[in-house]
Amino acid sequence: MWDGLLARPNYFCKRSIVPLYRGGNDEISNLALACRSCNLRKGTNTSGIDSTSNTEVSLFHPRENRWEENFKVQSESGAIAGMTPVGIVTVTALGMNSQPQLIARQLWIRLGLFP
Image (cartoon, rainbow, N blue to C red; front, side):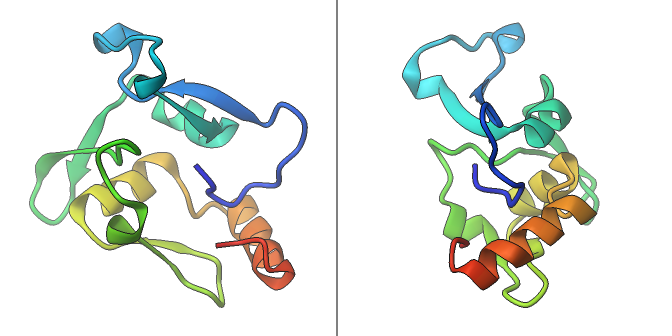
């Protein structure tokens, strides 16, 4: 997932979308790349609580959800806004707008590397 952190060797990790702990597997259909920050924040979570409806909502699933439908990048600030409950819960749960991520995204935008 391109979430705006500076790329460096071994920076992205293989991530089980559905964790092994929750019945996932190591098949390619259940794997995705994630930055270390998102990987650590996601942990074994597959859902979060939507603060608007106070209901449990699945986190973004890269094989089932489309990025463009769930997120919007604010070109000036580099912030990622959730456009759906899935997007909102994912941005919050993964802390996708932390200061280091925003700084990196702003640089990437100026360089034409993001989005």
